[in-house]
Structure formats: structure tokens, C-alpha cells
Picture 1 (tube, rainbow, N blue to C red):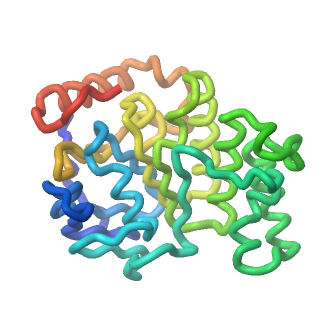
Picture 2 (cartoon, rainbow, N blue to C red; picture 1 turned 120 degrees about the vertical axis):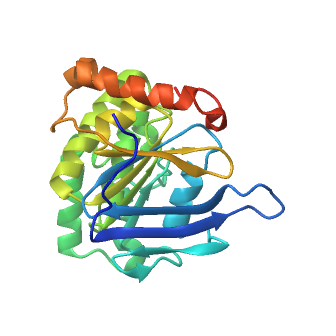
Length: 267
């Protein structure tokens, strides 16, 4: 299997060109001369070891940090700060403890203006979509970690963003909950069809969720490989044991093992 993509999408919705980012006084930079095009509706996993620039890349795309140089555009419009068209889920769901599940999902609407009837209906639909209708009136303190992340997913989708940014959203969860939420995320993405960038350390998680895997390695972070995942959808937990899944996972592990710049072993 070749790890290089021979064809770049003709009309990418997300375009990154020659991005460079370093925290003040820190060298080498975290990202340097990083370029990437992503097609509309693609689910792309950003895979790599700690310190390779994965989370930093998502912060740049979310408008939470600014690159020292380079350009970022979404649907032809420069990304220079937070945008309504970009939704993000962090490693921790950061729910407001004094608001119910429903009110946390409504936060994007409530901050802009008083939620309309249509927005409330959208929130209820999303809460049902993530399987939490029975918990809509609960407060975050009554939720498990997996339930809280479902609320975070629903809140991210509130305004139907063009671009979904997911920064290791399942990393703090146990293995069985991670598997269930991976199935949930796949189902939601297949319904919404937004463009998604999913950061992870996990090779199986990347292979299960993504149609394309971009491997970042080294510091400054650079693209070590860019590969397609030719596994049919919808994927099930049985897919994890399929011979093709194992072959792709082995290829990715060999890729990391063969690179001195890859850093610590990928989980």
C-alpha cells in the first residue's frame, strides 16, 4: 500500500498553506510549512504522537491561535478567528454545571440571542440523536463521562457547522465507552455530512472512523504520510477484527517504527 495520495481533491473546502506556528520563545516551531487540502464532507483523522502538533493544528483552525505565517481558508474565506461555521469538541466537554443538558446544547444559540422555537427543536433533535432524551433535564454532575461527551457532540452540531474539529474527544474514556461513542460519531457524521478533522493517538480509532489519515510526526510537525482508508461504511465493531483492518494498522505501525522523528510509540 502506498502511503502517498496521488490525487488532491479538485475543489477542497478546507485549504491550509505553509502554516507556521511557535509559542513565544519556543524553538523549533510546533508546525512549519504545513500544507493540507480537505474535500467537503471528508472525515480525516490526524494521527501522531504527543507533541507532533495535532491539537495545535485544530486550535489554529478553530481561531483560538493565530499562525505566524501561512494561510487557512474554509470555503474560500480566510480563517482569522472563531467562526460560526466551525464547531469544536475538546478532550473534556467543558459543560456549564449550572445548566441542564438541553441548555448546554442550546449555548451556541443562547449566546447569540434568545433561542428561537426552531433552535429549541434542533437542540431536542440532537439530544435525541446522541441518545440522551431521557437525560435532557439533568445537570452535568449527574452525567457519566460518555454522556457528557455526547452532550459536547450535540452542542458542536447545534448550528450545522461546515467543519467539525474533534480533539481526542474520547481519550479520557474507558475502552468500551470509546467504542460505543465511535459508533455514535460515525452514525452522526453520516447523517450530517459535515467535513470532520479528528485528532487521535490511536491507530485503531483513526482507521475505524476516518476515510483518510494524515500522519503528523516530528517537531516541527510535518506530514509524514497521507493515506486513504478503503474500508466500507457503515463500519461495525466486527470491522476491528477484519483482515484488511489489521493490514492497514500494521502498515501504519511500521511507518511510525521506521521514522526516527515519529517520537514515542503510538498507542
